[in-house]
Image (cartoon, rainbow over all chains, first blue to last red):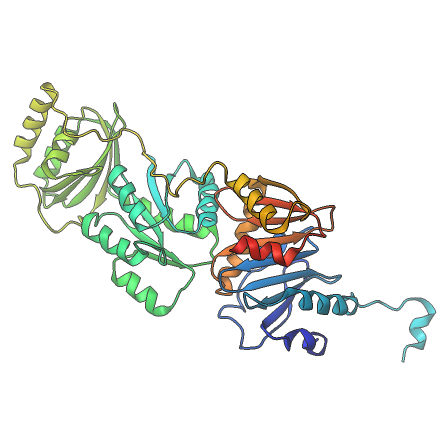
Length: 115
Length: 336
């Protein structure tokens, strides 16, 4: 997954990102300057629940910003600086989105010819 | 007796959400709100508070200063600290300062409620009595040389007061901001009270130097002559926790957006809607976790005809905009 998110993580102003399942379980995380304290034990379920029905959410705080994008497998949460230009990040997410799909199970006779 | 818990935090969403969350416990305690230490001090003067829950970082008077003030003037009131910037050093300072509890944000409302209730239970660990004559009972305390803190509620006026006994000696009394002998006269004038007894006395300094018998007689005389010491409120008086928002805030916001972006900026509607409160609270908590400071606003695209910008406040303000609006410009204008 690291390769998938490389382009986002190397953008200027990006501090890290997390990928959550729809149930609020962290699936992946990467922080440029190390993870925040308590990340292992934090319960994200209420936060993810609060995003229900949202396609894209951009939260502006006094000292930073959280950009959240719904994908087919859950929510991508990007942590960034307060004045990060958002247009480029949205574009990167648009490019990334088709890669974030649930793994397809191979059915029928095709499964016999899997390499 | 329903006990008053004073919540102090400069984060509006947090205060509103806690007040709503504590509705479930309204049979156990009532909630008072204050937006900073100074408002809390004002509230403590006007109400009989059983417990204070306070944030640490606040403008004006912060949580540590408030804790010091309470320990000095109301040493019987337990304080629980809640903070989004928790460090072991802060916890040590808070506990050394007299805090009975310390909870790092984010936390579950149930956990805080549990801590509040277990702390409040100590107020009546020595028992509770209903419909008793205060004078008679208090003479018993004196005779038995008890060290205790007694909280009383007048059945007639619902006023609440507190008496501090050390080895049977009346050390001090308090009814709202009235202290010492005058507060004792007020309490001893109550014919029938409900009371709860807490073992121990947090007060070390003796502020009343008269015999109990003398105080009771003087209280009776004053009552007969209808001497009024002060106009304390009989009911809980809530200090306005935040400055009221201007009534035309929505109109001003609309004017600001149109002035900067023109009438064709995609602005559809502006209104207040509390249905967003719980979501806004979760957004704020996520921000707290990443140490991003207070939430200023959120832009939400639900794939519907309109997008929404939510502005946190006592009432969440919602700006409905066309998805074609100049989003970044709009957010910049709103954050100015």
